[in-house]
Length: 461
Image (cartoon, rainbow, N blue to C red; front, top):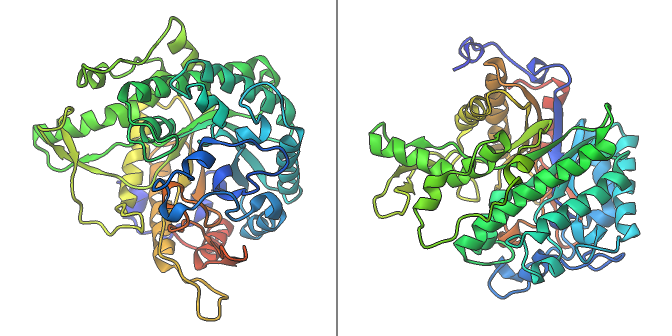
């Protein structure tokens, strides 16, 4: 543990390195709405959310919090917060409705307007190229399990680089390819809702290939300039703690890391996929790796984004093909049922830093919690003390990691505002701003004011 933590000295955000980026984050399908406006095409989430039983209560992202029309209001909230950057995602079907071919100028114009509004208030733009909303025509052609989708992603990325390069301060290629591949093509709980292990492995490989192709396109275009915006990727890696120190639990925790982390992190570092994971499922087809693919995936990036919500506990389970199971924990849980493990963030940042051998500066690109928030009787306030405590403890853990040598450059809280929480619809609230889904009204939660004071340096960690 950090010696600074042990000294009990009062600390604040000013103890983070000079230039540390405080931000908030959201994703296009979760906040934009305007699903059928200004030339936007359908995405796999438009389709998936209309399948009976796939999304709670049949909710969709058709309207959500309508940031497409109310972005000025949300930018003003960010200005009040004092954040340095807003991490948003670009909706592929808004820019390229068919997933290839014709470009929709109105879609690009929206992201220019959003970026201009942010820059006018001194807020940097951190743009994610893919946050799960694949154009439906590409899914109809096979989706991410098909190699061509990686090439289409590179094509779309180049369009964004060329059209929005002077509006974006930081690029992220993919958000959580584990979710896109495993939840979407293996477990079927996310769009497109498939349950095929071989397809999931192929999707994961083509997502990572698409990442590498996009970075290559960036380096050969506007990104070749010395002053070009940095580019990276965001992964939701996990480095669980074993339930006990027995060898079988230690082995189980290490095996857990194969698909959750090594599958996506190791290729970035020039390492192969975890072969023992594939060997556990001999009836399925390993990823369709072609000559040169791994070198493409390993093309240098400028930073690594880390999304963290909790640290799982893993125990041995001989009945599982890989010999593990998620074990119970004593920790309090969020409204998602996830254990609250701030020290896990410290351990995880240290693990990522050591595993990558310090090759990339790190950003926490998502961290936050869902809580069962309600408005006060007068409808003017939302008290969320558990979220305030959650953030305080995680900020402190992140600072411990910095003081112990981790090169952490920024911290994006998830999320600015309550929004469409994927298969949970509008039942789970992650925002530091409360969204009234009836009229779109925004109400600042106590955590909003807490984050503002943290950023200003007035609040201790």
